[in-house]
Length: 157
Length: 237
Image 1 (tube, rainbow over the protein chains, first blue to last red):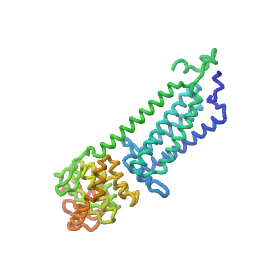
Image 2 (tube, rainbow over the protein chains, first blue to last red):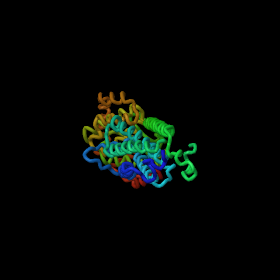
Image 3 (cartoon, rainbow over the protein chains, first blue to last red):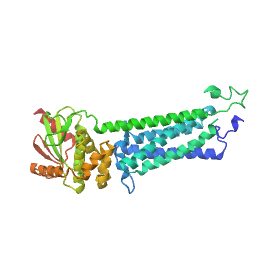
């Protein structure tokens, strides 16, 4: 067993790994876009562009749109920014730190998935309205989580 | 974290044995902590919202002898009797003005606001008014939260006042949904909403919002600045 032949070294050896990394970067950016837009409309009290359905405003103005007085979209935005920072950092830190950075990505995306599940449950069963932005964020977070599991495989002893 | 944190240069006399990475135990620890943290946050958030639904206000709230909800102490020097329709846009704007001045006037005991339903615009107005009174049955705190939620949900259009949604708001605020739904479905408050409408007409209300400040009639929306000036001038008299 040689340390330096692993696929998750500082410069990825396999094209699949590089491709996955770029996909995760792109998903974090998309997540920042969605959560950023929702945070922006919430903070400036603007209506949410929602296509044909009117679910977005119903969801955005429900009591569940805030957590401890802070819009949930802001928590989402922070999570996506943290993921992006960790993903970028992963390529720049030493190899022994890299595994822990990857573990951080896994932890944050797991937290994101659990919250998305809770919020989607609220939309469907309590608020009785679904907003496409929230669904988009839930999907982005879920894909990020699955990809982070695959990443974890390459840094697990 | 044992010796795994060492950089390769420190151990390069033995590079073959030294693998970099995390152990399964560390992954399980992170995953477990995350799940527990998420669970605790969700439970904490739900209980906080539930308490907020019927929870404390920073000023007195209650129900007048005539059965109308109020905020602000009954002994306040200024008394505003407000006639409103939940589907009226200017009423919603005026409600947010009243919310904006509440810290300075209602909370400081200078103003008492008494709410009267004047449901005349659409059938949804009547439904929403009945729903607000069903909320009042569960306490004035629920009424005011429900009132706020009805106005902020206006962006959802008419659909925001469907029977299903009116019930969903009650559930959101953590009310006793069984009692609320029964009250709404049996139109238990139909008579009172009708009586309030006639009482309003008797008092000279022709449109909404109409409000009587110490008996003086005002029609329509008033901006926050103008209302503050009006209240201040009346207080200094």
